[in-house]
Amino acid sequence: MQLHAGGLVRRARCCAAPGCPASFIDTTKRGQRRYCSGACSARLRMHRRRSSGIGGAGPDPLPLPGNRA
Ligand SMILES: [Zn+2]
Image (cartoon, rainbow, N blue to C red; front, side, top):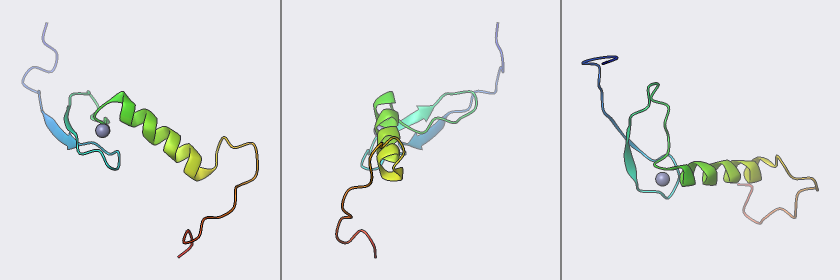
């Protein structure tokens, strides 16, 4: 059985995680893969949660100096 015969397209991409120099071949059907591994994906998720303030039950801590340009 060969689905999509001849439609094999290799997509070389760079990991979307900041600071990660890894690259990978996106072999997903939809080509929506962004990270080289699940570790980077999880890391970005946590980072986004923290930076957006979602998931925090308490008020924001003191603003860091230089945070506002
Ligand atoms: Zn990565």
